[in-house]
Length: 398
Image (cartoon, rainbow, N blue to C red; front, side):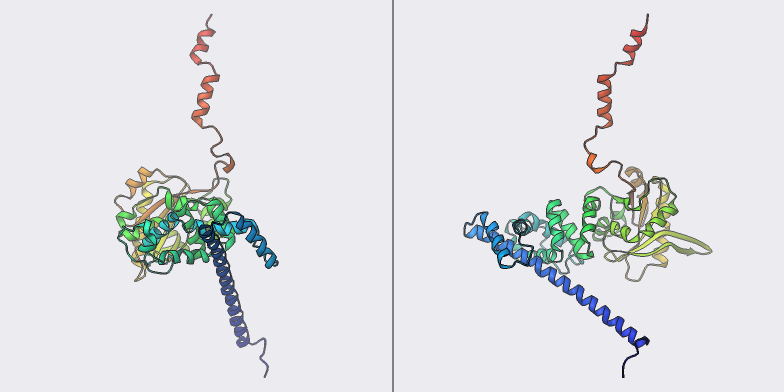
């Protein structure tokens, strides 16, 4: 008996098979990438070790590349430049500085989804000079596991553009967890995602409203400034239009927010008695296990915004928070803010609230940054070139 190609039973079966094939292809692609990256790691390591033990010079790279191309003519990855990159790849990810930073990151993320394995406590007194003895293989293996989950083309760009070990780990972790394409990775680097997520000063009351370990993770979730240039806005708009544009480009917005955000809804309805209230944008953060409410403002921060967000968070915790969820978090996203004003506005708020700015377009093209004179420099030049007004008036008298 032949299956009826139009029957729902056959169509469902076909859908399942197609899904299984796509999953298998994805897993196969990841396995191939992992093997390829580890192959390059081993080649780089072999070159470094031979140069140390056998005294080989730099000429070995050119010779090895030539011999590999002759042996494997169908493989285009054995150019001299790429073999040099393999050596650089192993060297840069095996330095004491990089492993030292990896140790700190792994310890800070113990028990989370950083690399999927627990890390032994060292009490903050790890002797990094004897790293191989203190944490012999766990951290080195964790670094290999992490880099193997990132495609080679991404590594090439990271080696070119990101030298800071902490920043490199940030972009590696995000790429591995969320499957960033190379273009997305480059946009994140260009937009200084690491600096805005980790290094820049942030304004919030997380340390007052949350336990210490959760406050640290919430701080990392928040950025000091969000780059919304992808919205293409070059004129004044209303808050509703800003919200609509963000929803229409939700994938790009979630990429800008960072890893872990899952969209719940816009103008999310909350009720209290006979009254209704609406949260502009509501997300759930998978790693924080908390609802995250966004309030969009087209102008500067005002202290009353904090009170409104505090009220919304009380409602979310009372009516929407799951049994295992942590306290809901609020983010007020505005065009500008005064840090001192924000600090005073959040002092008495019981719920965790962060305030961040957004940027709709670059105020100055990147190629001109640092090259144009400042206002003070222009004023100094003007004083040198133009005569003093009082002198001009004295000369004008008969």
